[in-house]
Length: 362
Image (cartoon, one colour):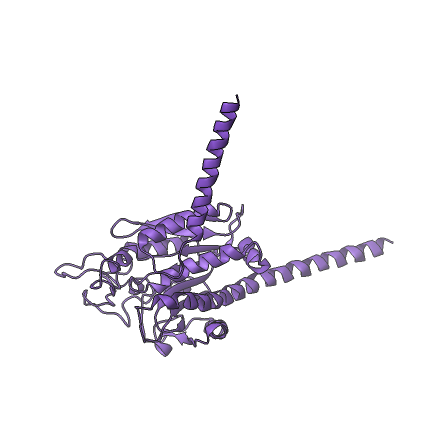
């Protein structure tokens, strides 16, 4: 009998040791380094295992090379549909700082929702849909060696009679597709594809957003470089109906960003502060009615460009996190504080009516 009890205790001890080892391994994940796609996928799995109450994963498409496009859904469980915030990173393969930011963002919100009442409230009222690497094929290709490091596009083959590969996914969405800031040369870095949504990655995002557009309040897509916050639209002759508000929200985020490490971010539409473009995911999100849609172009301003040194990962992510949270908090408060005011007003109206009725009876 004692032997059996000892055996049980040994097994339990080994299980506990294994769990602790797993916990230490996760906690030792290095957020100051760039990571391969395999490492990011393993991190996603670990994040889900470590936070089962607030994190789940969802596969919503496949890349051209048949890799599963997966997002993390973060927030408290609800029996009814919740409003949501979308964030994607890594739509352009060479912009390694973008996936690093998505991972940093997830780490921060999961590390603070239990102690920070504001983040806790966000988890109650919102779901976060976060895709750390959208262009998985291109990202993996950019890791092969120095000759592929600056690869930008997807990895689908070129059109007939073209020997080049890839489409610029951020020119492939159905939003003023093919109008400005694109190339019809399939070897160009800004080739917009044979047709809108020719790329399975762009199609997957389009279908997910379309199926959930009534829930989506905010769309954030993370890029580099330039230190910019871009609002819709990329076409110089088209403005979002809430352009002034988007600018106000973007400028507030830029102010918060500057307060962290002193870095200045310009805010405006793409034609005003960068260059005209069409077919972007940001423009598509606004076009289908997601009211708050922004592109972040992270550090730097061209000194190192896409090869941002690893010692800048943490400060870049720290400032961008504050900027993103500034936008998310604004969106949340506008939607839920106004709802709370309406509920309170209705309650007071009801109470007053009841009081008047009771006094009338008296």
